[in-house]
Structures are given as C-alpha cells and as structure tokens.
Amino acid sequence: VDPALVHHFFGSKERLFAAVMQLPVVPGEVLAAALAPGAREPGRGLGEHLLRTVLGIWEVAEIRATFLGLLRTVGSSEPAGVMMREFVVENILGRVALAAREAGAAGDAEAELRAALVGSQILGLGLARYLLQLEPLAQASHDELAAAIGPTLERYLTGVIT
Amino acid sequence: VDPALVHHFFGSKERLFAAVMQLPVVPGEVLAAALAPGAREPGRGLGEHLLRTVLGIWEVAEIRATFLGLLRTVGSSEPAGVMMREFVVENILGRVALAAREAGAAGDAEAELRAALVGSQILGLGLARYLLQLEPLAQASHDELAAAIGPTLERYLTGVIT
Image (cartoon, rainbow over all chains, first blue to last red; front, top):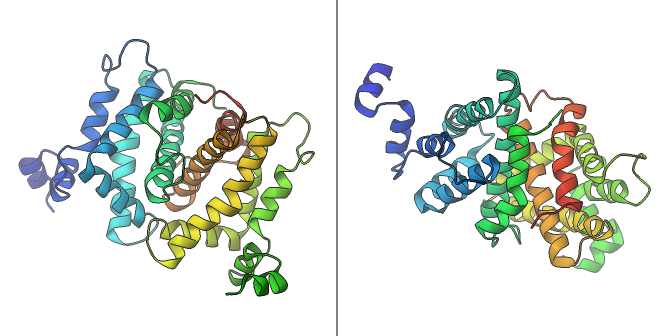
C-alpha cells in the first residue's frame, strides 16, 4: 500500500488499523492523550494513571475483543501475529517510552527498557484476567488492580530498576 | 482415565503431563523445591529467587518449547488451552500461593491474589521475552531481569498490595 494514500485517507497507519478493526477509538491515541502532561488527577502517580487508562480501554467491548484476538495470535508467524507485534511496539511501547523520557529516564535505551517492563506487566494482566480468567484477577475491580499493580508500573516508569 | 492408574504408574497427574510432554523435569516440582524454606541464598529475597528459578527453568529448551506452545493456545477452547489453564492454576499458582502463606499472607484469599499477581508478571515476561521478542527484554540477562522484576515479585508476595 502506498503510505501517501494511507496518510491521505486515514491520517496514519494506526488509524487505518483502527478503521479496519472497526474500533470506536484509536487505542494509541487514547493512550497518548492519557499520558500527556496535565492529563493526570493531582496526586495520582503515572503508573496508576496508566493502568487505569488501560483498564478503561479494555472495558470497551470492541477493543477488548480486538486485543484478545491479537493476543491469541502472538507468536504465530501469520500476519495477525506480525500485526500484534507491530501494534504493541509502534503504537503502545513507543508512547510509554516517550512518557518515561518525560518522567526522567536517562536515555532512549533506559526508556525502552522501562516501556518493555510496563508492557510485560500489562500484557500479562490482560492474559491472566481475560484469557486465562485467573481468579481473583478476573473479578478484581479497577481500584483493587490500581492498588496492587499501579506501584509496579510506577517503579518501572520512574523508579530504580537496575 | 482412572486416577488410581495415573497415580500407580506416574505418581501424579503432573508427572503424567511431564512424561507425555517428554519434559526432562517436572516444572512444578522444580518450583516447589525452589520455594521450600532454606532453598534460598542468604540475603536473596523470595521474589528475586522465584524469578531466577523461572528463568532457569525456561533455559531448558524442551521446557521453554512446551511453555511457549501452551502460551500460544491460551484462551482457545481446545484441549491444549484447557490444559494450560489447569497447569498454571494447579501446578504453578497453587505452589506460589503456598509460599505466600508461609511468607505471611493473611489468608487463602490474600495468598491467591498474591499468586495471581506473580503469575501475571511471569506470564507477561514470558510472552514479551520469548513470543513477542520485545527488546531489550529478549536480550536481557538474568541479573538485569532480577534487578528490574525481582522487586515486583517480592512486593506481590510479601509487600503491601491493597
């Protein structure tokens, strides 16, 4: 596909993806807005804020279905597996790494490590909560998950990790 | 299958599973031994010790292949998906919950939550490191992962999570 055409009609590859998947919002754009300076409630850490944003995005049935469908294809060499990897790296981790830089990460390499750690916990939560339906994670409220996992993401984003 | 026959020939359903999968060790038994009191190096936290144990188990090619094969089937309703869920809950999380109880969890419900949190981070790490091959997690050493993720597991097992 001609990238110029994609840009003309959809604005970005990510928006084309959202349109093809019939998503009501563009996940990466919601994430970018949530991670923007000033988007947080006063006193709420970046980690908890990020987690609550992701939990909110997953509440949208069409998005959750798309996410779980992609998660099922992870590791396959089929196009859907490749798409999942691209989607995670470009649209999700790239934005988390940017937030880590703004929060004080010492360089791109450190920001990438921080983003990948965040990604590993968020993907694992999605896997455990929705696909494996492990209790009590499957039934846990956003508040319970924020208390348990928010500090993990906060440390991965801004704490001592080496 | 008659459970008495399984017990007679294999000792447990878990050992039958390991035999069928041609695993060189029984993963849950390695985990149980690692989590036993006294198995840790002095000064090393339970979280870091657990993480290093899992990373060591994953280094065994046959075990990693089986784990990744099961991870790919998660969420499917096929027998392999059901087997993955049973394997995780019975052989892995049950033992982690027991360790959380011994480390001071206030009751079975709390121990189960702690084990499920640990499971979510470990599954997410496996997914990110081996299936998605996200950098820099895919190339990270055990020491680097222990420094980054060990404290997360330590907190999930023994820290404040509510």
